[in-house]
Each structure stands twice: as C-alpha cells, then as structure tokens.
Length: 282
Figure (spheres, helix red, strand yellow):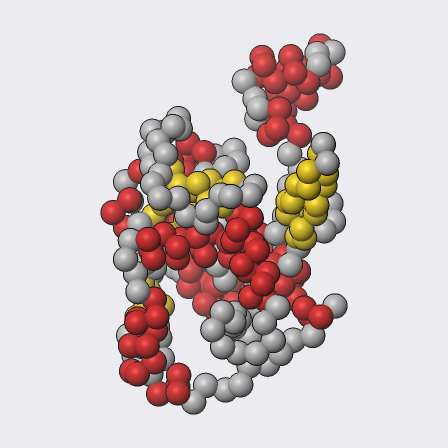
C-alpha cells in the first residue's frame, strides 16, 4: 500500500520521492527495491494443482509430493509474507523438524542464523527473542577485513534490544570459495546432494573478489559478478557456516561427533567416490 501511496502523491501532487515517502511513512529503499525473484510459474502452477487434489495437505506434504516427481526447487523454501505471523509460524515448524540419517537416528536443527537485515527487521527480532534457548540467533552480516566469522559476544545496540551476532561474511566467503576449489574428497571438501540444479550453483558462485584502491591502499570486497545476480544460495550457505561457528564457540566438538556417527553408519565406511563437476572449472 505504501508503494501505491507514494506513486499517487508523486503523480497527482507532483511531490518528490523524498517528500512523498516522508508523508506516506515509507522507506525510500523499499520504494526503489526491485525484486530479483524468479516467477517460478510452473512450480506455482503445479503446487496449485496438488493443493486442489489434496485439499487436506499442507505445503510441507505438498513439497514431499513434488520431490517424488523430481522437482528440486523449493525444497528449503517457506512461502509467505514476512510482515505477517503465518510465515514465521511455518518457519518455526521447519526449524523443529528432524532429518533421517543412514545411521538410524534423526538429526535435529542444532542452530539457525536469522538474517535481520531488510524490510522486516522487527519481525525477525521478535522471532529470535523467544527462541534463544534453541539457538535461533539473530545475525547481521558485515563485510570488511578483520571481522571474525562469529563474535565473542553479541551486541544489544539495536532497536529490539536483543542479542545480535555480527557475522564476518567476507571471512566466511573466503573459506567457502577455498573449499569449493578442492578437487579431491577429504578434510574441508564440500559435498552436495545430487538433487541440486545448475541454478543453485550459479547462485553459490555469484560473487567475486574485487580490489579497489583508495589513497593508494587496496580495499578488498566481495561483489556480484553481474548486476542483478541472485545469490540466495551463497547467503544461506554463509549463514549456516556462521551458525556452525556459533555452536563450536559453545563447545561443539564436531570431529568427535562425526567419528561417532561414522562408526554407527556402515555406509560411511564404504562411501562412493564423489562425482567431480566441470562447473567450477569454467
């Protein structure tokens, strides 16, 4: 509604964007924002068909049907309006889900990093406020040299007055891209499920390091390779990596847990050799 109000004030009364936003109580960044989300017309259409066929099914069971049909998209998406409570309730259900492991036990979500940037910061604050005991952390990414992946302690200098963890995104991206270059399986190598499509890896590799000079000093930063390039896969990977560092800072001994799972799981001892993709060599 605020977009329409600003457009009306500009068209009918000849007001500037700044003045119209001030009157309508809208953020100028929100008015200028242009979504880069794909329309996903076929996916949405198939979801509607399944919803009409299975009227008692929720979206989670509908996506199970989609996966059985070989649809890789939307597996980790939660559809809804972030300005309302329904989406956050659905997200809470997803975070309470468990995932079966070949060793015979279910894996819970040990921690999650919720990005509080964007246009719905207040809702993100409120969501994380009551879930700190479950390690649902409010985070904010910050680029630049010298910023650690995970801070020693959170800051409370925010409007929500909640613990806010500043994540050093540049440090994480350096580590992720270094691991993506590893050609052989072993320590540090990243393994991906076969269901991921090419669009996921385009998003994962959507940025590059750019070095510019100011007063003779080199300044290094991560920038999109192309204007309007989507990078949701990279962002979620970075924040998941940061959440892992948060768990390690609380005493998680990852190597010991992995060794324990490997002893229980016979598949881990006879794992198939990885399939090396030519994607990273382009």
